[in-house]
Image 1 (cartoon, helix red, strand yellow):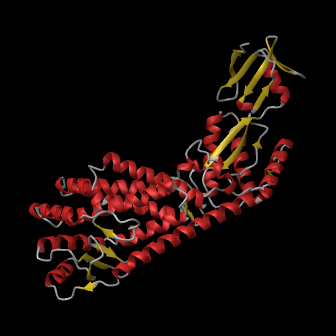
Image 2 (image 1 turned 120 degrees about the horizontal axis):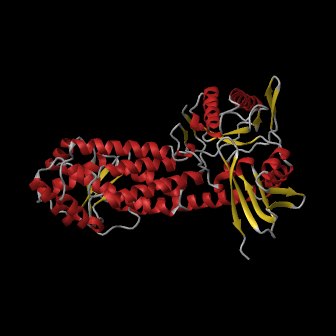
Image 3 (image 1 turned 90 degrees about the vertical axis):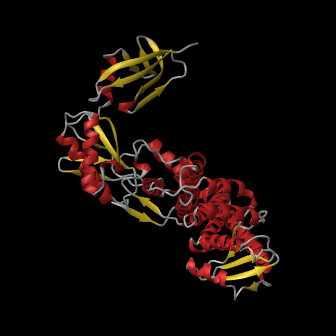
Amino acid sequence: MWIIKMNMPLVLMSLVGGGMIVIVVLLKKIFGRFLPKRLFPLLWICVLIRLLLPFSLSTPFNLTSLPDWKLPVFFERFAESTDVIVQAGTAGQTAETNVTEDRQIAYTTTNEVTQSALPALQWNWATIRMVGTLLLGGFLFWRYTQTRRKFDDSILIEDDERVSSILEERNVRAEVYLNDQIQGPLVSGVLRPLIFLPASLDFRDSELLRNILLHECAHIRRRDNLMKLAALLALCIHWFNPLVWLMVNWISRDLEEACDETVLTILDIQQRQSYARALIQMSRKRLKFAWNYCAFSRNEVERRVRSIAAYKPLKKIMTVSCLGLLVCFTMITAAAAQTPFSSELSSMCYSADSRFMLEAELTRDLNLPSTQEIRSRADQALIQVLRQNPQDGLNALKEKAATALAAEFHAEPRAFHIAAYLNLREEKLNQEYREHELIYDHEGYTYQGKKVRVMEDKMAGLYSMQSDGQVDVYIERDDHGQIVDLKIYRVQD
């Protein structure tokens, strides 16, 4: 069962996107020499999709459905909250959800804090986020208009056969202009891209002109300016995330390297040497806030020239490996997180025939409404497991319960987390403890006459503490809930 919702909180989008940015940068740093340069813009596209689209994907492969995965507490306030007390059962047997007084107090307190503090906090954060987005967006637009004015006095190149033949060869429809206010060639525009060449360019050097136009045509064919625009949009939305600022710079570098590699695929060895010389000759100092344009840059020329010198045609096995890496990266990051949801599913279910009680929670969003009917179905499935398998151990019961719920709700067993506790009355528990010299009185527990400071029985769900105790006692049970050992630790003075 695959579920897609467009409701992921922005902060969670930014957190997951930041993790993806770190992964791409590490891949670049560690394996950049061995991987094709054109792979990294594809990886950045995956990151941009995560940052720009608030989709939440719930699949059997979600990382959050792994055993013992817990959503960070930071995001719990985004989850739906429910306060449902239900009774569900079958003939002759009842499953109850008994909310204790402590839990009621805790819920009431949390609810009051949520009602009083969180709305103001959310309002303030939403306001700050919106103001930051508007300020950064306005600043970038202002810088764009200031830079765009430099192109107003450009001269259209119309009758140069060399220019038109290269554009026709690369199947690119774009106008080429000369401009005396720019230091290097660049491409401007998304829907109607234009190529601008510096007026200082030596048009007598046909080989230089060809290399420059091949590079700019590669930018246009790859829609690099559209990707840069998407990166800037992500920056405006996630301006509070420093990793997104880092991403914008990395995208600019990787687009240039990918463009170089695209051009090299159509050049022979001598032409590649000429292309490297053109790169050096036409490099320029990086203009501030030039993220809107695709252009040569002096900052990365040395590294790019080394990449050109080391270029080798991509082998089929490398192509297949890169496609596999791209698919794995896409699937893993898409399933890395989902919108917080209410994980409550069943009541605490028990049977007179079984030594255990079972309770089920969801590990991923199955789009199940938090209704009494859903909880009743889950309760009945758990009770049926307990009644049909009274002699089974804890692990077998958990496995069968998950399988039963999977069949009931048409999901995989891993989508359900089963909690199990001993179904023993207090008198029976104390009787078992006495058999191991652990005695309970109205003041607390004692072991062999010594006062117990900490007593923990996880399977029974019991924890007791006395500040003036002399020993700590931890009870270990086997798969059938029988006490097998008492771990005793003396309290040091």
